[in-house]
Amino acid sequence: MATVCFISDVTGTVIYFTAKLAITCSYAVIYVFTAELFPTEIRHTLLGSCSMVARLGAITAPQWQVLNNLIEGLPFYIFSFTSITSGGLIFLLPETLKLSLPDTIEDAEKLGRKRRHR
Image 1: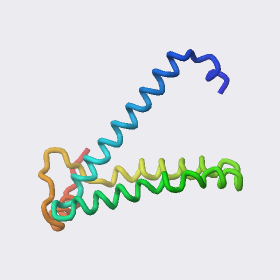
Image 2: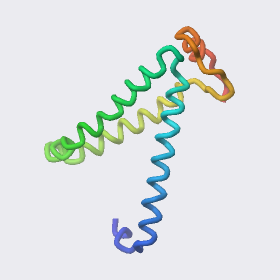
Image 3: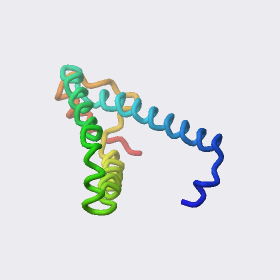
């Protein structure tokens, strides 16, 4: 924590923009990968549903300070748990590299059954 005081403005700006770039890239990858998992006939509906659920963080953001006042560090533990859990669950998703996108729900179910060795 003490080293934060000794970072120059330029270094802090570079770190900030690098983190911003990484977050932007991860959102782009998330939307592309999510769209590849869903069949064509319901892709837009499910992508919209995923986007809506993803916005719950912004909706609940004002309440995080209340949770922190209730139990010190609770938001940190919640964010840590959800980040680690989602990071682990990503390994359960099927590989879509060089595969055609599913057109029907049955095709999507087959995509989930085809596990490629990593």
